[in-house]
Length: 220
Image (cartoon, rainbow, N blue to C red; front, top):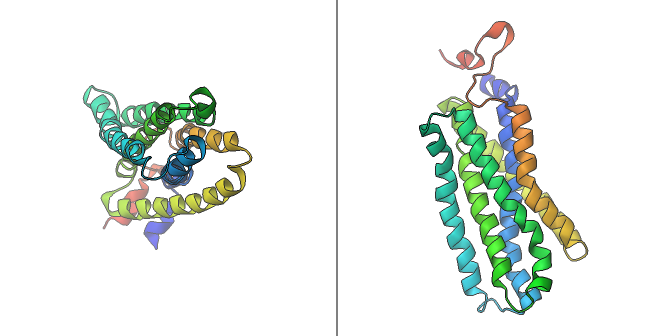
């Protein structure tokens, strides 16, 4: 009970959970929407779309390794944990922005699906790099005994966000696809801005009244 009370007073919990809630739904949108997009715009059956879909998954796996290692590389070069994590989150969030061009790809390349697939692959890879970095932040902000709780809460918020975004997509995608892709591409930048506002410096232990380390209350 004391642990949950302290967690709820820690802005890091809200920063992590909001980031999960805003960006997890976009990943599921990539995966579920891509086959439908290829069919509706290029007439590709699921069998014909096999290699484009495999490409997106393969590139996203590479993004997970590169994006996840970016913050560590920066920290090894002498930067702070705060700088390393947020630099990686900034780079990956910027790499998602070209996704907003997807609704125009059919007009620009009416007989070639690969440019659109490339944008999906870049966004999926960036998401995996973002996610790998985001998952390290609870270990920077909370003691080991609390990390699993924070990740669990963040995962629940991510699932809730996914459900809400699915409802939004089902009502708006066919009528206003640009709005949906604007939301998807901008979710990461917005999440990072919120994260920065709530946690200006990652790795700083939260202080209570009189400057007492709040985590000390859970020890001993």
